[in-house]
Length: 97
Image 1 (cartoon, rainbow, N blue to C red):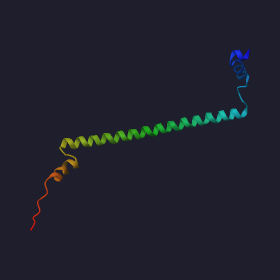
Image 2 (image 1 turned 45 degrees about the horizontal axis):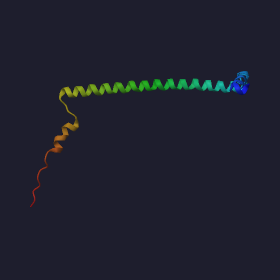
Image 3 (image 1 turned 60 degrees about the vertical axis):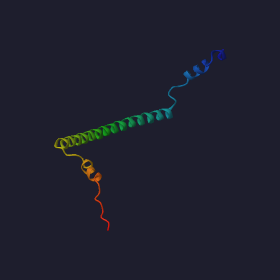
Image 4 (image 1 turned 30 degrees about the horizontal axis):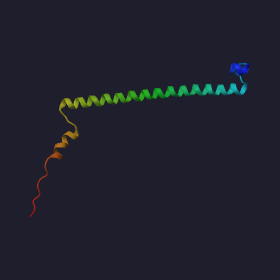
C-alpha cells in the first residue's frame, strides 16, 4: 500500500521522529539564535552610523549650496569662469629678427 500512497510512509516516519534531536541540536540551535541576534544588533549599529554619515553629508551639501548661492548673488563666478577668457585670448606675436 505504501507504494501506491507515494511518500505517505516516509511522511509518517518523519513525523514520528523526535523533534528535539538531543542536546547537540539544542546547542546548535542556541548558537544559531545568538548569532542571529548578534547580526541584528550589528546591522542596527551599522544603520545608525550610516544615518549619522548621511546627516553629516546633507549638512555639508546644504552649507556648500548656501555658499554658492551667496557668491552667485554677489556676482562672483567660479575660478574656471574667471580664468577661461585668459586662456582663450590670443598670444602676443613674437618678433623675429
